Image (cartoon, helix red, strand yellow):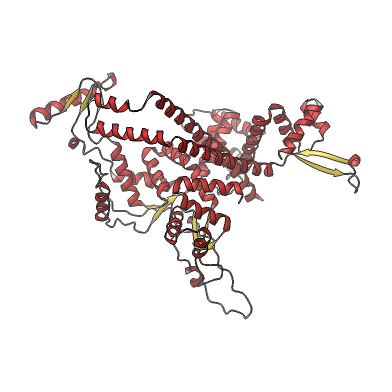
Length: 596
């Protein structure tokens, strides 16, 4: 764990959980596993705050606890996971991916679980159904009148006549906005059913985007459950394993429990001061058994990462070749999702016949054309697809490790080109391809003058992007009898660039927090005015009152707010873009470690 990782973890903890949690979390990251007494003594944080901070970290999976290193009876020790904290940076990407795949319901399910760490299925379904119901118009249903809604408008006119003359229900029609306004008691059917949210939850579990949390085991349970062995005098006790169990190690990790939850989401019709107390009382009253008590669910980050990896490979194939080639690779990856291990270097072999039958019907491609595309993918220098046999019309695999290596290589080349120019990128690519070259060979192959090539090589060498290897002819290492070869070691260079990316993201977060602090008064004023406008609009205020409130912000302040929001949006976008590079580099490094 490097200093840049600890710094970035501290900023993420401060932004999401506060300064106290940041202090406790960073202390555990630097000091390793520690018990409660040491944490209180070295951080200077009161006991109750330390306990609450540890509870927050454990709730979100960023901290695990186990029995002490001295064996049974020793104080419980806590340690934090740097990788889990860094996943906070990728929360927007998880939510956006779920929205793309499963719509608004899936998006809210993932968002709730990310915000709260882990929840039961029943509580998640209730919360999401209530939020979806709230998003529907609680007071009125406004239907805009245009050419595309003429049938719907005629239907509303019929409803208007029936309700007006038979049941004496007043339905208003606003001529200025061309909207039909219906009283709220007529909208009771527009509530999200618990069954729909449960179905979306089940789909997320079936595709392994959600998984059960491993059963909570007491700190000393492992030590007490171990078989007692006679201790030999003078022999130290065997250390207790502190590795937390993985969710996949339990057979019911992806089994959805039978839940007896029937009803619809509830809509809040008031927002008074005592609303929180009423909600708390209602939560206690509604705490009835639904059949899933004690079964908590969490987001499966590894499944999201596999999806991101597949999408990166598909996008690279589309950019390198064409859309049809990327669709063939997408089909191969989809077919091997279940059969391929997450740490495998390549997918399971698939025959050309299976690939042809599994292509989407919208791609009306003949079998010979599919064979030509597969041959083109195999012969491509990027080697995304390889051939593993001849049976079944040819057996093909997707080279996952080779694809990640090529994506990481393209990232390194892009960084060199943006920082040092196209000629330096040409030298860098040349060294990646030729492995070892002398300075004279670099000048000749790259077709760059000797002086410029020398300056570029020394610049890349100073930035640790290029390494210099000495091969002596004699044991005395005399310069006149030594070959000096330039080379690029992709794996160490990727690790160095990964640390630079961590530093970049930390700088972006600090800059965003600084901008928010500097403009705190203006932001608070804008939020107060927006709250006043929302309350006035809900109470049916006149346009003159709304205009008067809007004029409380001057034109200069509006320009400052617009510039500030634009600047913060750019910083957020930059964080997401750097995180994409972080993901590719991390995937390549982890894949290389698993293959070695």
